[in-house]
Image 1 (cartoon, protein in one colour):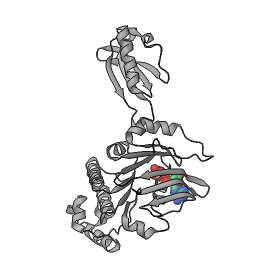
Image 2: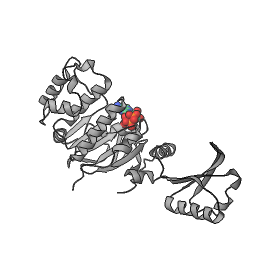
Image 3: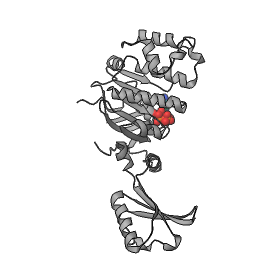
Image 4: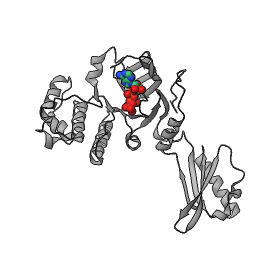
Amino acid sequence: MTPIVEVRDLHFSYGNHDAVRGVSLTIEAGQVYALLGTNGAGKTTTLELIQGFRRPREGAVRVLGVDPAAEPRTIRARTGAMLQEAGFFPELSVRSTLALWADLSSRRDRVDDVLERVGLTHKRDTKVQSLSGGERRRLDLAATIWGGPDLIVLDEPTTGLDPASRQTLWTLVRQLRDGGTTVLLTTHQLEEAESLADRVAIMHHGVIAVAGTLDEVLASQPARVSFDIEPSVGLSWLAPVLPGVAVDQDVVRRPHGSRLEVRVSGPEPVRDLRWVLDAADRAGVVLERLRANPASLEEVFHQVRLSAPAPSPAPTAREVSA
Ligand code: ATP
């Protein structure tokens, strides 16, 4: 099946500033794809290129099988976009705003149904200027999902939303996905990506530093086995340390006295856990609070930020898996 979005080696510059430097990504039908990244990483620019609002300096974009910059009408008819700032008339009511939207859109839908889906029925007669930030965001979303587009693009959709409104939006995104809609979103909230996304990409300085399913992205950093032991035990029983494994330790206070907290980081958590258990067994060491965890998305994000690529020459995007 043709991917809904296919981007190959995309480059874009504002003057002499290279904002996007070799981005490649593929989004299949019915996926939620989350683009994360540091401030100024190039996420919004990438979204604009994908929607055909800008033309790449180099590289190719196909959305719904066509070049969005060459066929904007085709793309508009099948894509709903929620940008960071939507321009609605402040004097119009919520209902009139959507009715106006209905006139402008080539897609058909019912105003009351859409208001119901985004939880704005009770505000249907309120003027846009009197809506709270979260309510405005819901109105943005109503316009975005109007008429059931094949692809929706959400630029930081939950910025400024309270936890309840955020949950509403997440539920709606899941419903859209379950109905076959493809969703591309940017976010600064790692929890949002963890909760919603089928695939995650982290951008930094104009490139995708790491991408894949959430598990693949988490596996790009060492997993961790951690445990507490009596400080007097020391670590000699763990020798020899396995190749590729790092062991570090801290003295920590616990309710029943000080303990040595030991962290074993390595690429193969199952192997590392087995090694720790076997060594402890042989030495008769008691392990307290034993845990094995993959790296968190926050740790991966932090690592990406630390490993800033040189601005020149432009590196290419790296996908964890195709
Ligand atoms: P944020 O997370 O802060 O919203 P972003 O990842 O969406 O950032 P972009 O908005 O795509 O990043 O910006 C990428 C880079 O391009 C930034 O360095 C930004 O300052 C620059 N930039 C963006 N828009 C313009 C513009 N219209 N003119 C010049 N430079 C721009």
